[in-house]
Image 1 (cartoon, rainbow, N blue to C red):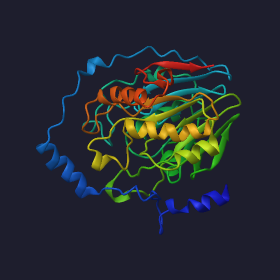
Image 2: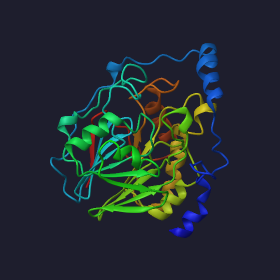
Image 3: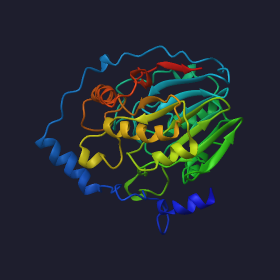
Length: 336
């Protein structure tokens, strides 16, 4: 592991902080954001969104208090918040139960769909996995609620996020660099590369790391890719950590492409990522679960476009339709 971390040391920025180490990962700055939001949107109005009522929620069907260790269940709460039952443990990813993805609750991106699992209905939470510190993934009020209700939670976060969690009462915090392996119970967790950025204010950009996570129990393995653009390390994730039963990949918040392409995958990128992951499957079935769409309006594509475009691209690539899970908010699916 140490040799591999040395090879990837380029994601550590000289002088402190982090960066994407790939040539294709050129970030856009604040002036580009102003060009997009103030100029381009006036020249090219956004296409209409559907009625939010068209996003029909399902009734979550996870196991209470815990699922059998030989069963893997995935429940979509919204955006990249999932309840994952694996190895007999209950795991949350990027938990956000607030009304807005914002430092304040009177302005900022508002939920189109309420959290599809009521917070008070959650089973006992054993672990929380965090991908990075943006407001739509690291939600301070939700963290405080979880800490109060389940003080023994194991928190797993990329480098630089521990102080934020501890300041809100988290006790058991594990910080990880890419390719670090940690453990809770019989569940092994590997922090894996992602292409994104971090920062909750303009002056603190990229001072903390971003990542995905691989969860491996005695019977199942799952990739939670976090919030990411397409990058060349999906093949390394496949060979080092695969094969997987399922991969949770982001499919939304991708337009305009010139601005979002370096931080978010679109469905075409997502299919390419799956193709890379399949190199480590050795013939094993891989289920892809769609995330990062239909919850917060962050970019210019219509809110219902990502799943339709994802299904079309998946089918045209010759993948089995049964292996694409575009779930309804609140839906639970299981792999036995």
